[in-house]
Image (tube, rainbow, N blue to C red; front, side, top):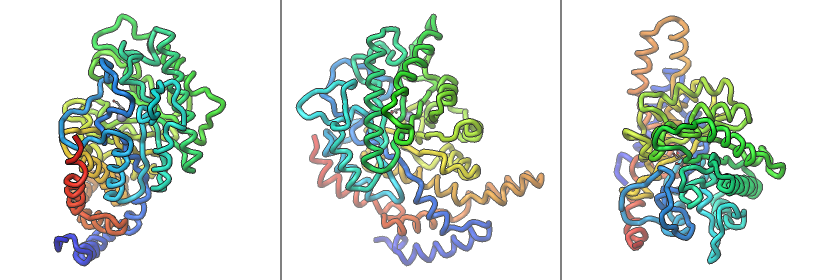
Amino acid sequence: MKSSTSRQSISASYRLARAAYAECGVDTDAAIKRALAVPISLHCWQADDVRGLETPRDGVAGGGILSTGGYPGRARNGDEMRRDLDLVLKLLPGKQRLNLHAFYAETGAKSVDRDAITPAHFAHWVSWAKSHRIGLDFNPTYFAHEMANSGFTLSSADKKVREFWINHGRASRRIAQHFSKELGSPCVINHWIPDGTKDQPADRWGPRSRLVDSLDAVMEDPKVSPAHCIDAVEGKLFGIGSEDYVVGSHEFYYSYAQSRKVMPCLDLGHYHPTESVADKVSALMQFHERILLHTSRPIRWDSDHVVILDDAVKALFAEIARGGAFSRVFVALDFFDASINRIAAYVVGARATRQAILLGMLDPSKLLKAADAGGRGHERLALMEQAKAMPWGAVWDMLCLRAGTPPAAAWLADVANYEEKVLAKRS
Ligand code: RNT
Ligand code: ZN
């Protein structure tokens, strides 16, 4: 181990950092504890470039999401995915969950269509989650299927298509409830559909009105309880192939979520690049009890790059901390990059997300708010700038040590070793 990452040197740096933060009224020990306790739901789909485990289909539309790059080592089946995720979990401090998509069903030799999947098809995932003592979240997969090729699923004008996807949504909610019961932890299920058109449609009304009815049909299931299955709906501004018109736009889903008492899901990549997602939190949470967040990184468009500790992510969690809203927020990752080592992609993105959470917990909110309330805007601005220079890296390293995970970038050695022993052997 390098001397900078030895326990002794981290402890020494941490002592200084703790004292510096105490001067701003921030308790770093409490911040570490709280930051470790926030669950982050790891998306399973970085491991295999969002391909899913179904028998490969030819000529199906991908729903406008696309993982680019040809770095070796893509997981090719459920066992390889779980093995990769074993390592990822080892390298991440704090509480995690796993977020599955429906097309990661394992149906053996039999092919089972999306409207017919059952909890049994996720038995391997459930026992894996049990072995790690983590919860599972879920997503119906309303894309990458012949029935989505028209560009419409739940909002399709074709009743047969709608019914197929309604049945898929219903089957997915039963699976979510099963996860919750098996694992003793409510399952967040996020509904995202690719529906929309490349160019101006003559009818923007019909698909939206059908989407309301279809979502209602998916959600109205007396067998599924909201105590087990926590629904979210995710809007976006545009997608590839839905540049002009997205049926499930933000306005649509915020209103749907509010009227049906489900959660809106805010994905950091789903807005105009100059919009602040952080700013939306305090507006939406006046009316929504809970929200789901997808951390992602858009480069020029909704490109789903690996999350880094950028301003958007920091501002988002600072807002949640300042609003005391961590107990009302679910955090999930949503990115996919096939051009770099996929284990490292997970570790970088998940660690950056937790670093932003930690920074939120370390925010000198009391001082900032006092300066604001006292009309001393200059002081608030100066303190906000000063907060950027605080020794938070030492607090992060201590967080890693307390969680029993490698500090700083020391985890890269494990990734290199795994690449050589396991990933390099995959074709
Ligand atoms: C797509 C949405 C959605 C997906 C995943 C795979 O734009 O962000 O969350 O990325 O469901
Ligand atoms: Zn998303």
